[in-house]
Length: 192
Image (cartoon, rainbow, N blue to C red; front, top):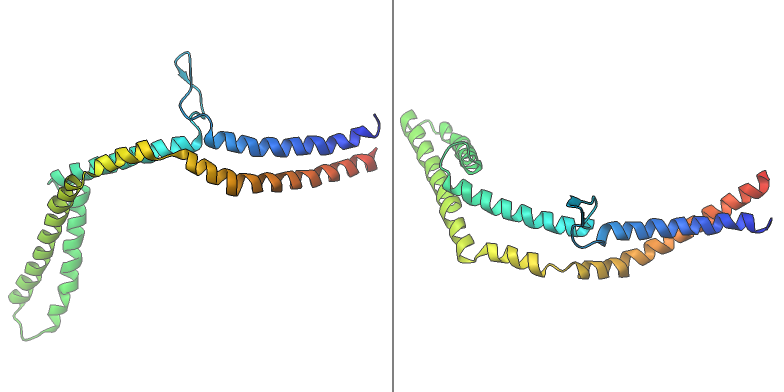
């Protein structure tokens, strides 16, 4: 029994290393759905990968609907209106090179600068507010998000995780904790 006590350090460290890697895998992939006990949601359910998949799908829906709502909103407080104003301002600033031409009258320079900035502004407005929503409707982008939600299979990711990451992480962890256990065993033998 006296000789077995130092070897217990190695076994406990190996068990701790395996437990850490297994806990990582469990937090990532298990359980697949939310778990409730007496109508209370248990934290860390579903697994992190399933949670992130649901979060990405929700963000895609929100992004699509917010964009379509901004396309319909002609107010100046929408994000698209701010982008259009930025484009107008940048084109106006880029057209300042007209000031170098001294033979043109000032009012012609400003009218030309305003005309070109307004044309680009209207083209941008048409493209963003009508053409992109038309493409979204034409190609039924929302159905692709639904398809991604249904067909986005986590088991493929789990297979890659097991094949390329879990095994090597387990080997590295067990090796590290084995040497830590040996070190702890030697310290215990020296101190005792």
